[in-house]
Length: 239
Image (tube, rainbow, N blue to C red; front, side, top):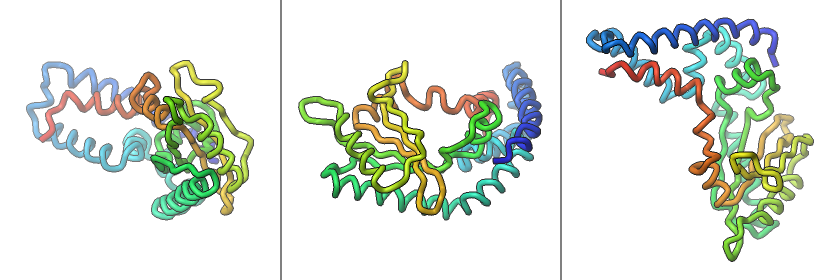
C-alpha cells in the first residue's frame, strides 16, 4: 500500500478542507453567491458528482493527486471496478448458498460493496490503518424463535464462512462484546482463493435493524467529510 505517497498527498486534502471551510462561511453570508449563475452551476455539478460517484468524487475534489494514486492502486491490486463487483457478487452468493445448505439457514439479506476511495484514503492516511476491507460483504440471518436475536445462527454462519475461506486471524465478536453504542455483529477478514482479502459481516435481522436505524446507525458517523462538503454547498441554490 502506498503509505509514503499518501501521507505526502495529505497536505492537498488539508488545504482543500480549509478552502471548504472558508466557502461554508462565505455562503452563509446573506446568500450573496446564490444570485449568480456560476456558483449555482458549480453547486449542481458538484452535487451530481458526489451523488453519482460517491466518495471517489469527493477525494478527486479535495485531493486530485491522492485520487490518482488510490485509483491506480485499486486497479492494480483488485482490477477494474466491474471486475471487483463481479468477484464480490460471486463470493456473496457462494457464502449465502453454503450457509443455506450446510446450516439450514436462509439468509434474509445479502449485501456486498467495494470500499470507496475517500474512505480508504482517510483510513490509511488519517487513522494510520492498513485497509483490509476494500472488499466487503454482509449476511443478515433470521432472528431466532421466541424473540431471540439469532446469535446461534450468526455463529453457525460464521463457521460456514471459515469452511469456505481461510481466516486471517482478524475475527471480531461484537455479539458477545457489543460496542458502546449497542452495535452487535460478527466481523472476519478472509482470504479468497485469488489471494484478495474480503471482510465478512454476519448479523441477525434485529442486529441489522439496530445498526441501520438505531443508536448504532452507521450513517451517523461514517461520512463526516462527505456531509461537510454537502453542508458547504447547502447555502447555494442549485439551478
